[in-house]
Length: 96
Image (cartoon, rainbow, N blue to C red):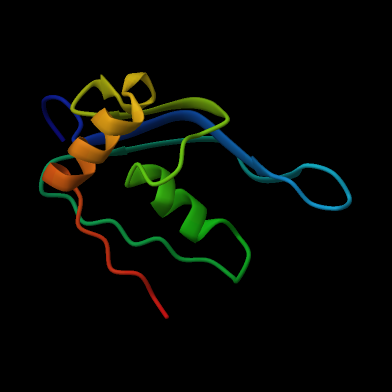
């Protein structure tokens, strides 16, 4: 891969609330995807695949770490700015 990554995650963590307390779904995930690369996210049910995809698509914000598109920190965008970025850059098909 040469040049700037298309998408990168750096030390990303995500927790959800549960009756037993915080549930850490992702912890310290780092990933780089270059232009033209294909990525397959696989794993057992409950392993954080949908959470990872939601973070990569800007549908969720990480509790720690950064998600960057072409070097731009998505966490620095307002909700309106993030919605505009998704409108221009992201295609997402939800499973039913």
